[in-house]
Figure 1: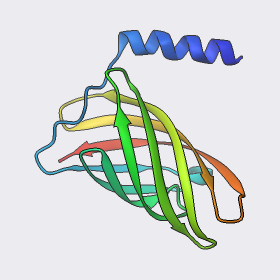
Figure 2 (figure 1 turned 30 degrees about the horizontal axis):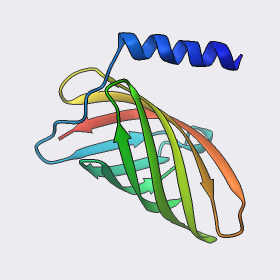
Figure 3 (figure 1 turned 180 degrees about the horizontal axis):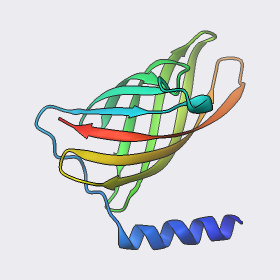
Figure 4 (figure 1 turned 30 degrees about the vertical axis):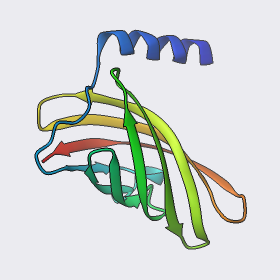
Length: 128
């Protein structure tokens, strides 16, 4: 199953690609979060940094590294009800137009008590 998943990523990476964002002001990422919550991710981004609600667990700051393929990586910190946590992961982002991209990601959160949670989200990036 994992091999099929990684082969699918490699094939889609060679067919599609998402160049770094070219925005005048910034971008807004909205995506569903845990249990398809409509307020899972609401982040305002400037370049590689995104600030806002992350996976419906708290407010934080994410650094997003986009590649020449649809794949991106992200790492950040956020404030949760249990204190401060580290969050990281990656996903895929596809160009639809010069003002919109589809985005899906998988992230893992580790809090101060060394408890981990994982999240899958799907949404869109509005380029401002």
